[in-house]
Amino acid sequence: MKFSKPKICTFSLPKGQTLLLENHFDEVYEGSLGLVQRANYQINDNCTFLPNSNIPKNIQEYDIFIFDFNNVEISEYNSLLNRRTDTKSTTEIYFKTSNPQKVFDPRMFVVNRIFEAIYKKGKSVNIIFSAEQETINYELLDVLTRNVSSIAFNTYSFLSENIGILNKFGTELTFPPSPCQYLFEQLAKDLNYKAVFQVENYFLESHDLNLIPLAINNDEELVAFILESKTHNYVFLPDIKGKV
Image (tube, rainbow, N blue to C red; front, top):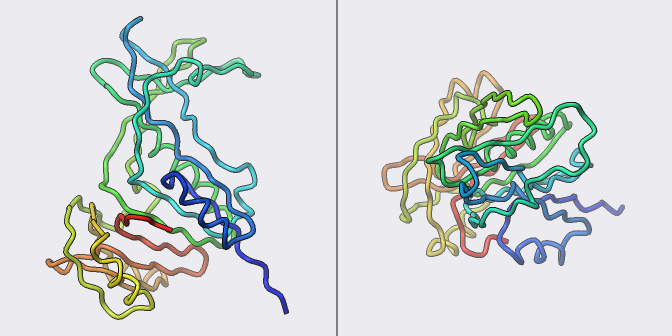
């Protein structure tokens, strides 16, 4: 009996990494969490942006999602990339920055939009190369009415508030027994972490979740782990050189 290979969708992996996956899987989509850009205030004190993300329209058909929260390249502002040319509505919404904000980073907004779609699926595996947690307050401007609204997201807004996250940086890790222990030991010199996690037992038990630790730091804090549920599974990993 022949089994079909899973469909994989990546978001913001370093250049060339998705290509390596294509050598082993039949269908791999290279997506993006958006374009991080420097604001340009040469004309006025406001600057408008579009996310410039790349999300497959058939996202519900993919099985495995890989997110890299560490791969960030800041581009110079490009007005052509931040202008709608096919508006079919009486509203036209843009992200807006104002001095002294220097950089527009759409990734937190886009990540949460992606997970809204993923959570509508029946099942998924979500592999996340973790980064430090940060919160961004986005301002949304309707250029026709000039009305401004705001919404805030942090890096891990898609997770339950019962999962604690603390920004912490380091490279020294130990690897408890797990299916990935040998692999992590081989990669140890290429690992660095930027966040640690805390998941209480009562939360796991009340939501019928299973947690498998993969890596802990010298303070016995959780750095990498698998979180299993009946529908959506997560694999949180530290940053790794040559991820695929």
